Length: 190
Image (tube, rainbow, N blue to C red; front, side, top):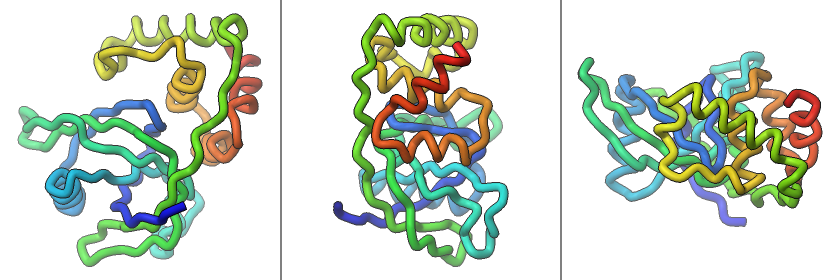
């Protein structure tokens, strides 16, 4: 698989393929990143933070991230830059370097999407609960013009974004070749 260099945006919140997120950008390094990716019609990688990793060695960023592109932006009332991003694909991040302003750049290669052949009847309880969450939280619902509730992969990715488990556990699920491990885990919860 080809390797690309992308700027990295580490967050405690999680964005996965098919997901959307609103971000407030205020640090100069990330303002520069947004300007550059918009000018180059490219994207950046949203990464999960590793609380046990050494920041000086760039080990505070988990290996699996999500390649994302800016789909909208606005100047917020407080003068900060607001952007809306869409997660497109999972990537593995290696060889992170830190630029002079603190922006991190990683060598990334795209991971194969999950195989997810869960029958509608089996996943329907998760779909129903996700519908309820979207109805309860209009700010979440407003991110998606057309939610893909009929797509098991999309439903499971949204659950993984929302689950209150640590980033290491989410990394474990993302590292699987298919969605069955996460589906089994969620089946016990929903």
